[in-house]
Amino acid sequence: NGLLVVPLSITVGYLSSTYQDRVLMTWLIAAGCLGMFLLIDVTDLVDSSNDTYNEGQPLAVGPPRYVSGYFLTYVSIQAFEGVIGSALSKVIPTALASGTFNSGLLATLVDTLGRACGDLFISLMGFVSMRQLMNLLFIPAFCVLATCLITIRKYYDLLAV
Image (tube, rainbow, N blue to C red; front, side, top):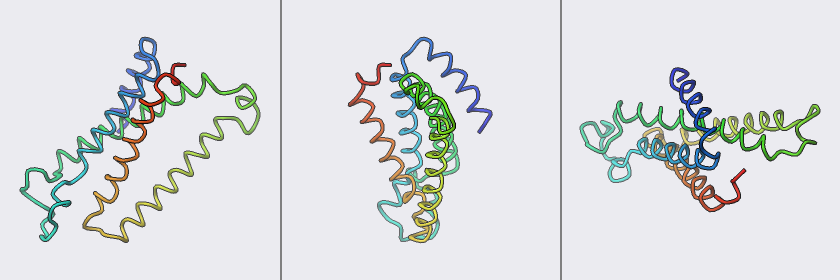
C-alpha cells in the first residue's frame, strides 16, 4: 500500500500548486467511488443459491477486480485525507490552531473514533452474513462516498479556499 500511497501523495502535492483543493477533492472521491463500485459483487445481488461464491460468472468479483478496486479506493481515500487537511488548514481559526486541544488533536480523535466505529460495523456485518459480507460492507461504503461526492459538487463554490 505504501508503495502506491506515497507516490500518489507526492503527485497530489504537486498538483495542488496547479489545481484548487475542491478539484482534487472531486477527482479523488470519484476515483474512490469507482474503486468501491468495483468491489460490489453484482452476482450476489441476483442469486446466491450456490456455495461456490459465483466462480466463473463474468460480473463476479474475482482476485484481479478485488485487488484493483481495493487499491484504487484505498489510495484515493488516503490522498483525499491529505487534501482535506490542506483545506482545513486554510480555514481553521487561529484559536483552534494552537494550544493542547488544537485541530490536529481533534482530527486524530475523530479519526480514531471513525476507525473504532468502522471495526464495530465490520464485526456486526460479519454476524449478519459471512456469505454476503463483501456487499454488506461495500454497498454502504459506496453510498457514503457517493454522498460525499454529491455534497462536494453541491457546495463546490463554498470550497474555493
